[in-house]
Amino acid sequence: MMTNDCHHAFRPVAAYGIDVKEKAMIDVAAIFLAWLDRTPLPVRIMVADISLSRVKFSIDGWACLQGSLNHCGINIYAMRGGECWDIIWDSDISPKEFDSGWGCGLCIDAWQQGSYPKPPSYASPEALWVEHTLEPFRDWLEKLVASAGVAFVDYDGATAAWLLLEGKPIPERAVEVVGRYLPLEELDA
Image 1 (cartoon, rainbow, N blue to C red):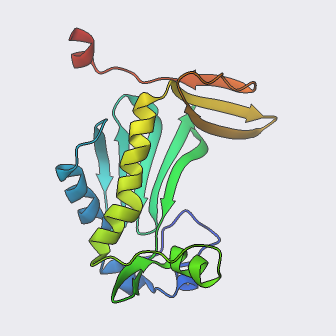
Image 2: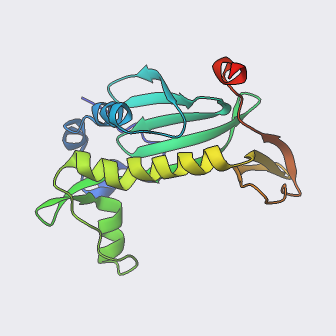
């Protein structure tokens, strides 16, 4: 039996009406790996570890970033000195049958509470994952590649990290800005 290994301590799976057995039927690792194989990305994703409940990965040239995909979505961690300073990007998802298809339970709940427009319904869990989580991840990777780097900021012990977009000033409390490291084959070109 799979366990809920999400990083969201305040969002148990049961809160969205989805039990662990139903989530186990959706092979998110296979969906992610197939998407990586067929989708052109602006930077290479290097899969480091695959288990039944998680895929850990890195982003080529960005040693300060580590990624994790699980049944709850994708998290990109900004790492400094071996410690996580911030989750610099994330996309939460909770697949749920909806309108004769599949939707995100989080978006459906927000819509039902009147705080979000009606979410789309997709033909399959894979289509939901691709449109709701993986394509936004690709869009974020494009912003990453176009950025000047990742700014690590310290607010008197409260840490944060974000993309430093080209032309934007370095944050006042930044302790470091880390850019992309070029692979050797790119240096020779």
